[in-house]
Length: 403
Length: 96
Image 1: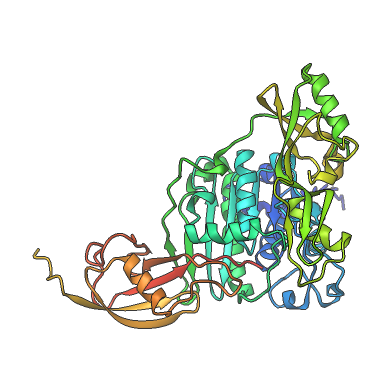
Image 2: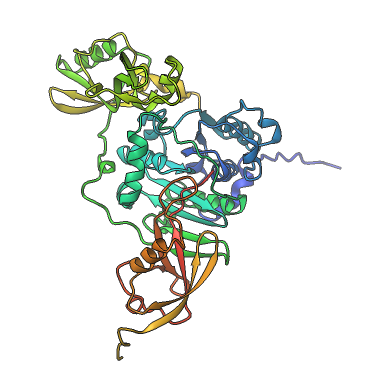
């Protein structure tokens, strides 16, 4: 009997075809870059969904390690991960790779407030927030709005949850903060005795049930914005949802009106891509900027304060010449000095700087030492005019070329 | 339609989220959402802060209307009826 050899080619993405039939573009999803901030209960659900849907590049930012308390609500974590050394972002990245080897994943072991450069946000199509505090949400909002990117926020408690889609042309997280929330934030930001890194105490009951629902809704909303031009019109941007798990219903909540005076509304212009790195010295970076613009009068405006002196009440002593980025102050002070836990350590009046120019006394210090994250976009003043310079040399730091 | 007198009261169920605890209350028909929330806070029926210390921002929503209620308008203005259920929802913060 004559046999006909039939060649069957199998599309590696064929298992995702049902999604395409539903109107999504697999090509868009494959080429999409998504940053997920927070790899806890919500983050696990969001990440799992993104990997199953074959979203091309997934970045995971979280500074925390896996603990036993995470196991009952996090699908990606195992008992063996709880040895006190394994970061949530690293473990989640490994598990996603098992779920879908085609997805490219980069864990970021850091805090969104201080460790993620704007250049990374610039390369994302969307950011998904799976956080547990106001400060990190405010940080994401400002980063995303500077880079003109939307972000999807989720939150859960017991069987309830909420979903918000924020975008530079729509609802703004910062605009909806109330006076009491600002007071709380100012206490956290202004206090030198505690790290700004906002570590959850795990006192709020969260469950994998509400995390599944809200995590799924977050990904659906993200896909509407990045996975199909046709679906954009269905986005819930500016139409928050409250999910009530008690009777499985959703409520439409009101978006907060935009305020004129809001720091988040400051958008950066297109940056100049420089072959610089956060590991370069202040002197070298200033020299590069001066040469590029042909202008000696150049200064870098930092996004945070650098603290140069603190005083110990108990020791009745001032420690100066420090140059510690304020977001890192608590941790650095603990590692550098033996302050008594009952001591009150204060930032000395006038001992802060936010501008680096030719008068900066330590041009040999690197930008990283002064708290500038890799791939950041520097705000630069050239003879008084603002320009933006990206530390594009740090692309290799986040494996941008190979991802 | 003749508006009810200024002293009219209606009976409502307020479901306090996210715990789902229900509270049967009688409220003046002309009380606003803000007045109701303030009174519940003042009587310590609902907490001002989450267990993590973040301030709670409360909203009132109607189950029957399917959405958030204005904090400035009265129950009468918002067409809330006797025996309706309102949801008191804090803006959630947790996610881990």
